[in-house]
Image (cartoon, rainbow, N blue to C red):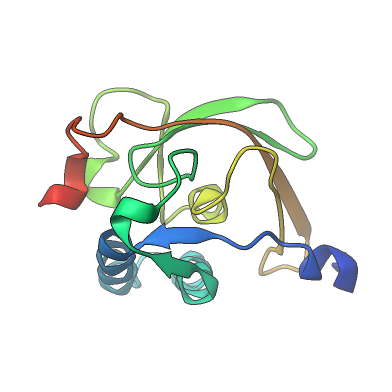
Length: 147
């Protein structure tokens, strides 16, 4: 079994989540518990440790629902995904990543340059690094949050 060092655990970056998105994601996590409780627990843990900010004050480069994220699992190949809620993961495009997935929950609230470290349920240390984040410009359709 692999363990995570206290320095890795303590260096997990502070994450930021907007108020509206926090409410939406909490409801999403609580209504999707049945499929994979461990993944949902991870999302709820991340939401619990998040710094919640007013939507208008959320920096533009923070990963949120609708973000196009260029990231690299460590080790692993670089990936480009759009972070979506589960209801939207069936939409066209194979690059969609649901926020209830492990990588989706890990990316939430991060910014370029951040490295996230966590333990899988089997005790394996996982890491990923955010390389670039693209979000819609203010005034663009924000997607499912507006509902």
